[in-house]
Image (cartoon, rainbow, N blue to C red; front, side):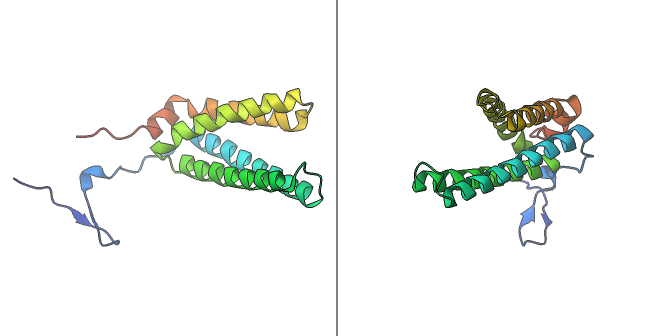
Length: 150
């Protein structure tokens, strides 16, 4: 049985040339979606700082819940940042998690509006709408498609 020749890489592992994806230009809309995701990550980072300050000042209902909410906000901000980097690099795996995070941002935005916090809710909703619109443009969808398997 004949095997396909492989190309050596700098990591010491052989890489199959059929599995490498040619570099394609990243569409502007995909960069917009990545920027919106990054801004959301920064906003969550700011919210985490506010949660940490409130917990340290003793304004949290319980110390343990304040610490937990702060850690969850930090972890979520870091995850959003990872998704933003993946979008900026046009990684196909980012499409589903980014859409799911935008759905949660929409829910959080409406919850903030319902809680009379429009200064947080309106930007969240605008960023989510911008990110989803940019993510679903034909150019972005093409850039995030996986290469067909042989």
